[in-house]
Each structure stands twice: as structure tokens, then as C-alpha cells.
Length: 211
Image 1: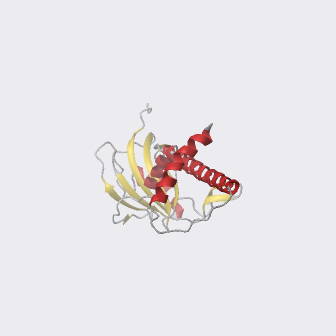
Image 2 (image 1 turned 120 degrees about the vertical axis):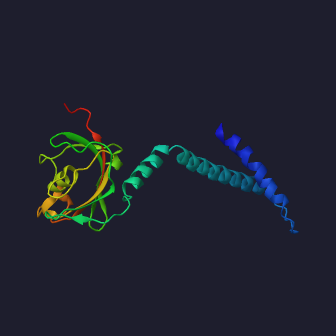
């Protein structure tokens, strides 16, 4: 049922192309049976090519979710604007891209942050943006690496972050995962030993479920 419809659709462009061939050509008459076979073969090829084209077009128009996912991943790999790091006695480097105007991170309570985590060479190894939702974490009680506790909650010369603030952190190995690799699964580790980590932190809000 489909082939006759496609054959009619492709026959008209074929004749239009022939009308623009103004160069004189010699015509050789062949037996009717050969012309019929060649015409049938040509028509089948056009139908097949058109079918492939329609299939490719349908694949393009039925993947909007993949396009959205690509945009999320791209946003996750774009760094916040640069700023000059300040270093405190512990070795932590920090600078504020945006200071924030809300309350400061409460120690011992849950907060929501967005983050992008990179190695020193700039390669992204983790990001909350790829999951399209902020991370809920408890700050100031050793539930995360020391560099995040100090870099977000403040202390030892680092001011606490405020809600709405954006901060860059450079976390040396002894405030991160130290001499042992981390994020290991089946022998493969996401974070090598003695890695310096770079974080872009956005303090979204204090978690609404806190008592």
C-alpha cells in the first residue's frame, strides 16, 4: 500500500529534471521489455532512497529529550567567571564570584547546592547540573570532605557562604581525598590519589526539611 504512494510522489520531480536538459541527445530505441525493467529498477531505487530519507527525518524530530540533555551537560561543563583565589593557612583557595544576599550556611544542617567538580587540568569529573537537581548535603560536621566543609561553612579565615552566593574553591589533596583514590568501583577509580580538586559552588538554599 505504501509503495504506490511514494512512486507517485517521486515521479514528478524526475520529469522536471528532464525538462531542463537542453543539450541535444541521440535517442536509441530499445525493446519494450528492457525499458520496462530499467524503469522498474529505477523506481524501486527512488522509493528506497526516499524511505531512508523519511526514516532519518523522523529520527531527528523525535529526539527533543536528547537535545535537552545535551544542553544540561554543556552547562555543567562551563566554568563560572574567573576570580582571583585567596589562600588561607590550611591551603584552601577560594574566591567569590557572587557574594550572595541570604543567610549563611548553618553548621550541622542540610543545605542545597549546585556544583561542578574538576581536576586541576580542568576535566569535569562530577556535576549536579548533569542530574538537573541540586545536591542536599550536611555542612560542618564531617559528612563531606574538609575542603567543602571549610569552603562553604567558613572557618580559619574563610567567610561562610550566603544563600545565593557563588564561590570557587581550590582544594588541596589533604583537604580532599588524600593519598588514597576515591570513587572506586570494580577496580576503576573516579578520583586518583593526591588529586587537587576545583569546585564551582552555587549555594541554592537552606534545605526546607530542616527542623
